[in-house]
Image 1 (tube, one colour):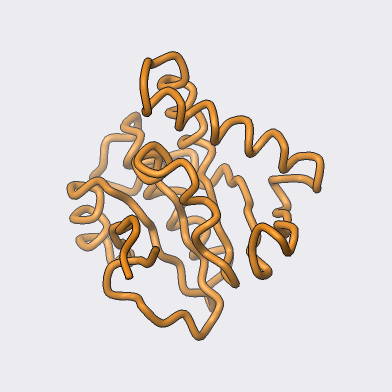
Image 2: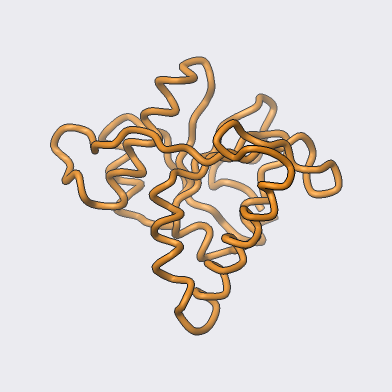
Length: 159
């Protein structure tokens, strides 16, 4: 698996995962070895809405919820935890609150806009890190481009 246009991962990056990625591929959280994965709190709210759905969508939401709950045994998700070596090579996972308001010009109650706000917040908190929002949502990628945020699509099973 790789991020479209990013075959080489020579330097550690931070990947902010959108709800669409976790619902599209429930195991995508494990797909970033040697990097940091950040999940905005808004994504957890959105996953909660899908957990009762039948089929793959509901299964994915429940899997991610259980996985994150299991990660709590390793450490605090707000601080970030390093996944065990057998799961990933020095990959970390962290849940962030981020900004409470969407950037100027974007509706403050829209989930995508709050995920953008969290991504911007992560970039301000870690200005030297490369932050990439990963989403299956085309409109969200376009919004990110308009705001100068690096955003890519997740391509499953790409060689």
